[in-house]
Image 1 (cartoon, chains in turn red, green):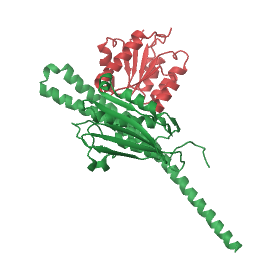
Image 2 (cartoon, one colour):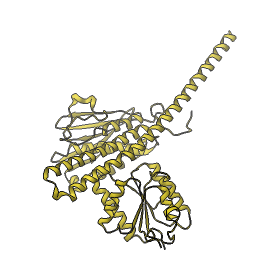
Image 3 (cartoon, each protein chain N blue to C red):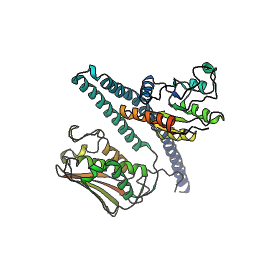
Image 4 (cartoon, helix red, strand yellow):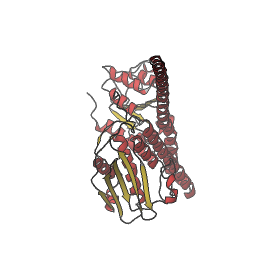
Length: 147
Length: 270
């Protein structure tokens, strides 16, 4: 049993400022109790597939949702998405792409690879907070997770 | 005589070959430049917005959570910071739209102009605002062109009409069209603040404004984008105004003419 087992939200975000703002937003709605932040694509995959520094994680306890930024160091977000959706044991994990990019090629590629949702991070603070807490509420409280 | 003709013919062939090579080279250079612009725009879109979000967010947190420790001047300073980040975010969006209007490959379909105009207007106004606007759309003939580009052009023209007539008690905006021999001329007329015709040649320039930001907000890219879009369709834009009384903006779309437009339908060689 490790501290990483019961994680509700896996946040994959390399920008510490954005990470801080996301956590604040989730805290406002009491959704931040069981979340973990990783700063690059490699750590995200290590966490999900229980390897590297997360080798002691129990894989059956999957995070209930992954917030995935696209422009990440080491492994690009789209590649992380591809691997999650390509593996039978993890393909049903809800992945919400949360990114600055509003560009069509990214949006198209993300949905093509099976992203459950695509959210563009607003620049405006109030909009950003609202978007993040809305997404948190939706995926943790409203949406019915896969069996 | 026959030999002379043959020599000439070969010279011509060679010349044509050289010119075709040059065209090929130029096309490759253009494609490279276009791809670099796309990468640049992509980087701008992503990398510039992130620090802006941080500046806006942390200023808001400062003035919000620490409001007890801040006097009213300190709070005003924070709001100046936030206003400027919002302005910069808008500038980034507008610059990207301007860049896209010049770069994007153009589609070509029959465009239902009436529908675009109606949808754009509904997207632009709140119910309260529309209550004081008399919006009239006359018959708008269809035209051939790129749908997203025309949407953008109409959005910009209507948004201007709405913005500049916002200070009139009753705004009157009329959208109409006229078929001419060479094509179709569409127009948007408003009864708003208008502009000074003396500065007409700055009207469609990038980042050029004819009004103070305190009078009417804006980045000065909207009309430049409209001009780019219409030019790429082989048309022209122009306007007329009576300052204080209103303005009318026109754009023409020529009848189907392969020579003038830079449509890119691939494989349509003569």
